[in-house]
Image 1 (tube, one colour):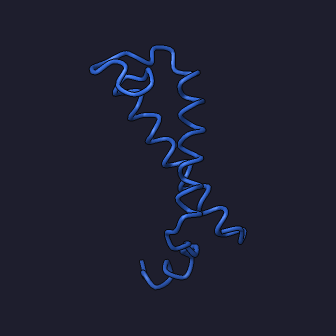
Image 2 (cartoon, one colour; image 1 turned 180 degrees about the horizontal axis):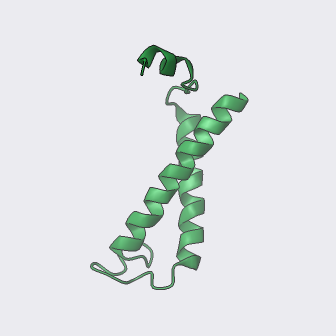
Length: 83
């Protein structure tokens, strides 16, 4: 496949600045609060209660999902023109 054709469909990205950092922080905090209330056994696994009552597996899961959601929100806001 020709890589030049793929280069034309890559969405524009916003350079990293404080507004992008604020969006990422808000998304991570929101997902953390949702995850903390939804996870059935938040202190399961090693190192229980590492961060605000979440064990290590729950903490890694929540922060991973927060970063995925944050990246999507940043790309979406960039494409709309808000960022």
